[in-house]
Length: 313
Image 1 (cartoon, rainbow, N blue to C red):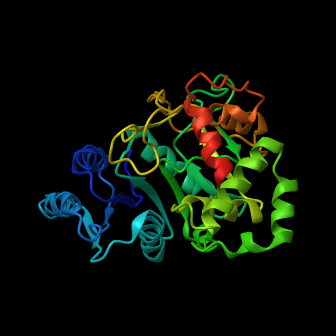
Image 2: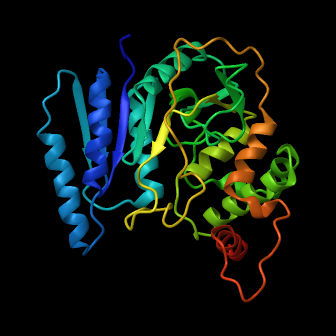
């Protein structure tokens, strides 16, 4: 099987995990590899050294395909950096695969993305294809993939036609009527509460990320994600000091690579699986589901720390 789909790798200051992921991308030999590297933060010598290592690594690559690079001269940060990288990809390509520096996929991930990209290329109901099944294995005895509202962006693929709806500033969320409609649209209260808190935190400037904006674009356009029934992604950046959002314990440290057989069998039921969505939210934020509070003398759990933080937002 030949990979004919461009791949974007987004990097910053972690040359060790970057090399592991880059080696995996080179192994499957896409025709074009886009490599984005954000600039060091001002005055941060560690960033300066690590970013330089990544750029030297990339510039020293020997590769039969095309390598395109974008090395920023000033630091953009997570929100503007990653969204800029993705816009760069979709300005040049009709479709593509997006991987961050700590997202380690299986080889099958790339071919699965390519298969789904071509299959649903003109289907406006689909905005994204994720390789990450956050439950690990979901109904794989009856299907190869399903549809969901909660599609992870740890290793994903998409089209220019969907990315055109992306707005990094997310002005729609400042419209009270949109907020009401999103609240009514989401299938259960816990999911609605979670998304509202996330979107509010972005608008207020308390959260610096790129993906909440794409989640909202999915919702207001009544779009869904494709999720493989078996997980194809590991996050190798969890619980590192240099992690942006995944420091400390994580409910997703259990993600494993699964073997899948391609091509996937067609799934004609294009209804988002709310049971899957609910299980993902429950796994990530179980305190949303009547989890008893700890007594004051006990130390807070990871989930209660998250609850306290999200409540403050």
